[in-house]
Length: 318
Image 1 (cartoon, rainbow, N blue to C red):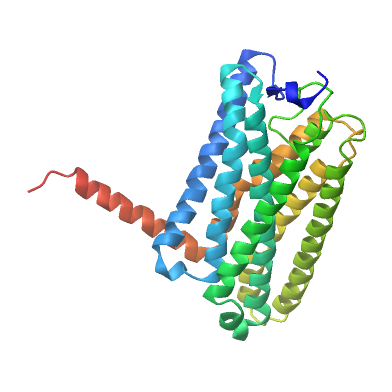
Image 2: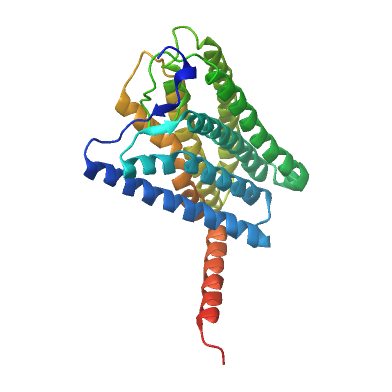
């Protein structure tokens, strides 16, 4: 196979050789996927329906849940289908689409996490200016910029990656189409352009991470000056989970995309990809909802109202 023009499909990584383990992976992924759908769906519905949650923080959280739903739906269903049907195939077009949406959604999510750190900085360090700096128009513009940055990054990386000649077969050592593993199939020295794009993206990502760290340093300094221990606990409980999610997302993403191609540890690559592509979308709803009493109350109210409506509809009319 001398050129990518002859490739009509790729072969993804098989989780296991035995049928029992394949079905085990299917059920594990199904449980994780359903949890992500339920958690993020509840957050989106609750914030959209409860006017008390129409504030900048919850607006950004709604966008984060939308991105989480999209990102986990890009990778997990195909892996589930392959495990269930005992196959490894993904079409060339499907692989390109998967690469585009993975980079788009995760790029947008990282940009949005940066915006959310700015939101928390203003809320805690400059509360009197919160309404001025984070008005409706400013929030919409920042969210649109996050989505736009992800889209532009995905467009550049996808176009460049799939313009390369591939002469090292069509088997990928990953359970979804990931750029570093596609580059391993390219001809020698032909992927320097995409390495350059990855380097620029990594530089921008590092700049965002520095911004997030500086924001949280300022936040923690302000929190420590709060005289009330209850106030300190509330602020820390809101910010620390966010920082933990960002740290996990950034560290695993950088390992996956910046690790030298010559360094290959298939088991490590698989674990790292699961940690940045599957775990955050499933855990984000749990982290943000359990640490937010207002959101928990709103979700409980929504569920109880829905249950009441269902009981009214199911009860016989007088």
